[in-house]
Image (tube, rainbow, N blue to C red; front, side):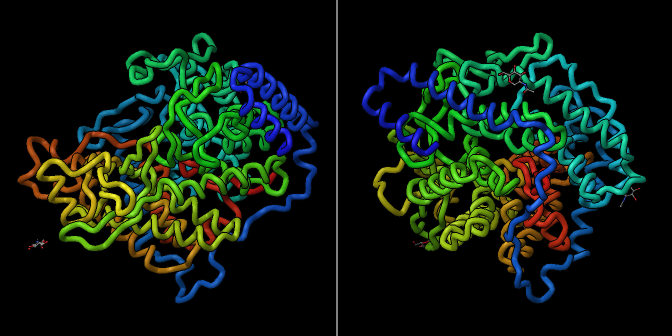
Length: 573
Ligand SMILES: *[C@@H]1O[C@H](CO)[C@@H](O)[C@H](O)[C@H]1NC(C)=O
Ligand SMILES: *[C@@H]1O[C@H](CO)[C@@H](O)[C@H](O)[C@H]1NC(C)=O
Ligand SMILES: *[C@@H]1O[C@H](CO)[C@@H](O)[C@H](O)[C@H]1NC(C)=O
């Protein structure tokens, strides 16, 4: 394979016009290799001696920090119980509850996204009555029926991931038999198969890159609806970003393991193959240029970064190597690609902030690149990077990567610490210390200037959407370093969420993390809250918080890989 790749690259360098033919050749060859790889008899999957696991978690815990802080863990569990019961009593069966008004919202095809996405959190917390109610619903859903177009990315990470993770947790003995019976486990797996098969047309594009949507009524991959795709309408064909193309391999690999059917692993591997084995020259090693035309496979944009829309591709490059080593046929390719991408993040996108008039400390943030422009902004989503890099630093024994990760984590923490609510904003900017006399973004309004003067960054989107990435990275940091400070930071974040987000019917998003005084809230809570609670609040934010305070042997990182939606999968094949 490496030799093959070199050939592809040099051929492309000399003969850019041959790219279409070349693309066809690449596809044919990779298709053949993968068919060959995955078409062995199913029995091969289970006859291998299960040698698995990683040495990721801290092995030198002191002061009992590996044992649970029961009191704090229970407080987080209470928040989950509250979230569950408000939804159960007011919006059961809807995709999500609107936490301020109490009505239901069904923007995820109406299959009960909250129920499917939050079930693995109920399992880990041992909320068994609540889990039994959820499983009853999950088994009864008709995943083939929906009025709306289906988003294969969201559906895979929230629904399919939640289903196969439940089966894995059952098989590992985490769920008692009197809560979920064997035939209920089989029915959940059958639901996962039904859903994955219905998503199949997503993979039916000329390049195998996934379609943006699937029309279930016609079993067909389609473009986004015009309203959604207006920003992409300048492109001739549908386009896809790295995260959408590259975040289905964990879920589908697990489904192949559970069923013995190689189709799922094969399709999801082919879906990201054009990114992993790209034949296009990329500006920075390991980093994909996006968006990408799903018909030609050509990058039609020059965006490159680890932030929204790109993030989980890099996350899955690492995690797929942890899921089933050393059996993965492409283990070393994925590992190398991740290493290069992490190096580019460090060299190209990591950006230290300059001192501000009233804030001399400098912080490390994650910037972006768009063609020749260096964009000095980061979003909350990119706070997943410290956790993923820490995981890599332990798994691949790269100490300096760990130090880099912790510096990024402190940058994220700084955004939380600096606001009156003690919760970080959705997006922010800073003046880079090095290299740019005239950065793209500078503080303009009096408010931006004031925020920048006193904290060294200013919010460009001051909402908090219930997102998990910061506390997710704290969870990894606690489990990997064994240091108590990460539990403290997690507790600060949780108490702030409890204080500011808790609403009559759940946990609301914040309209402005800088606005905590009641006189700043107009009307019936608008101005304070956004009437929205995404399922990742229960699937991820509360799960990672709870795991940070619970016993470190629960869902150990030496035995489990968490999906980008927080669903744990067993490291086994
Ligand atoms: C969860 O909340 C319900 C309803 O308020 C309550 O009856 C139940 O005791 C709670 N469970 C736990 C474990 O706190
Ligand atoms: C696999 O991909 C093919 C297209 O190559 C598609 O027709 C099929 O439905 C997909 N199946 C699944 C289960 O994803
Ligand atoms: C901010 O710094 C300036 C000098 O750079 C100083 O005059 C001013 O008092 C400081 N303001 C605060 C709130 O510390």
